Figure 1 (tube, protein in one colour):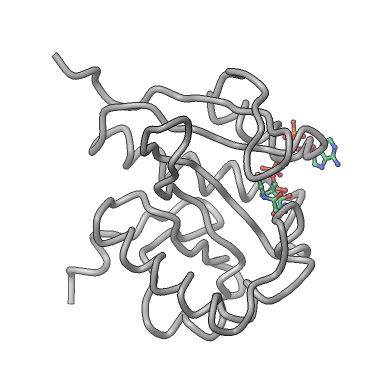
Figure 2 (figure 1 turned 90 degrees about the horizontal axis):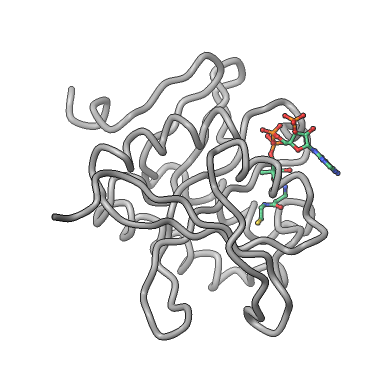
Length: 175
Ligand SMILES: CC(C)(COP(=O)(O)OP(=O)(O)OC[C@H]1O[C@@H](n2cnc3c(N)ncnc32)[C@H](O)[C@@H]1OP(=O)(O)O)[C@@H](O)C(=O)NCCC(=O)NCCS
C-alpha cells in the first residue's frame, strides 16, 4: 500500500501524483473542454483524449516528473496537471514543462505551488534542461514559468505560431 504514496508530492493545498486509471474519464472530459484547453491548438476528440491519457501514463512511468494530475486537497478533485513531456524541437528530443488548470482554480497560485513541488523531484532525478513553450500573449503562464526559475531563451516558430521559449537547468550537470 505504500508504493503509490511514495510517488505523491503534497503541498499546503495540493497533491501531485502520477495518473491512475480512475483519472481517465476526468482527463478525457478536460482534454475535450474548450475552457480547459485555451492556448492550445484545439480541443481533443474523444479518441485523441484517450490517447493523450495513455501517453500521460506512459511518460509518468518513464520519468517521475511527467505531466501528472494536480489534486485540490480541499475538494479532492483533479483540477489540472503539471509536469514534463517529450518534445522534438530543432532536431533534438527535449523535455517540455507545462501546466493547465480548470478555470475556477486559476489565479490562486496553484500552478506555481504544484510545479515547484514536482520540479523538486526533477532536480533530484534528472540532470539537463527543461523547456517551456508559451504563446507571447499568455502572460499568466509566463509569470508562472519565471516564478519557477525559467529564463527567457528566444522567440521561435512552433507548430505554426510564434512562441516564447524559456529554459531551466535542473539537477547536477553531467561530469
Ligand atoms: C497558466 C495557468 C496554469 C496559471 O495558473 P495559476 O495557478 O493561475 O498561476 P499562478 O496563480 O501560480 O500565477 C499566475 C501569475 O500570473 C498572473 N496573472 C494571471 N492572469 C494574468 C493575466 N491575464 N495577465 C497578467 N498576469 C496574469 C498572476 O497575478 C500570477 O502572478 P503573481 O503571482 O506575480 O501575482 C492557468 O492560468 C491556466 O491553466 N491557463 C490556461 C492553460 C494555459 O495557458 N496553460 C499554459 C500553456 S503554456
